[in-house]
Length: 196
Image 1 (cartoon, one colour):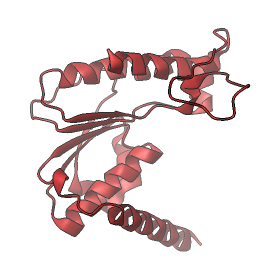
Image 2 (cartoon, helix red, strand yellow):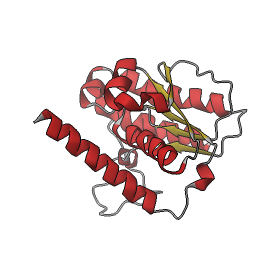
Image 3 (cartoon, one colour):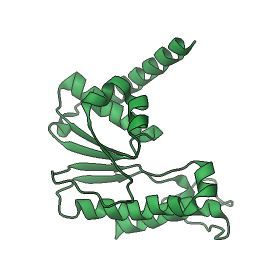
Image 4 (cartoon, helix red, strand yellow):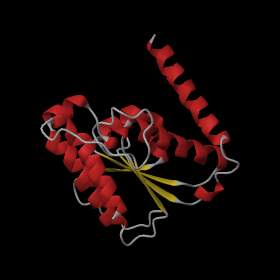
């Protein structure tokens, strides 16, 4: 049963990578570029890492993939034999990030969205989203970064019960006494930092 589930998961990932690959005429613009991915063991970031590895294998694009993660064990468990296909730096995004080489693209996905951690460590959630974003902005300040992708959340729009469709400029309120608000409020603050 375990092997079936593992093989099924691998097939799904392969199918997803192939579908994404076919969605573009060419991925050549990523050739010889460096991509930094924070929060690399999270669901969406891990999918992106796997796709960059897929592109390197399929088209020999020589994308340098850099992962920033807290846990070496999680990286090993999640990526297994792929760990030789990228470079990994182990640290908390809340600590100053030092990297001398150029970075072309940053994907900032470091954020703990776990309901348990939101309830029991709201300050840690805020730090990862706000301080982590500030640290990345400091890192890229003097680098020629072409693009910075911030993985936010639909929760930044707050409580908008009267609307069916949410527009980019819609913003509702949060209950500041609800510790759950630490997640969307800190994501919203990170968006403000990026806009500044």
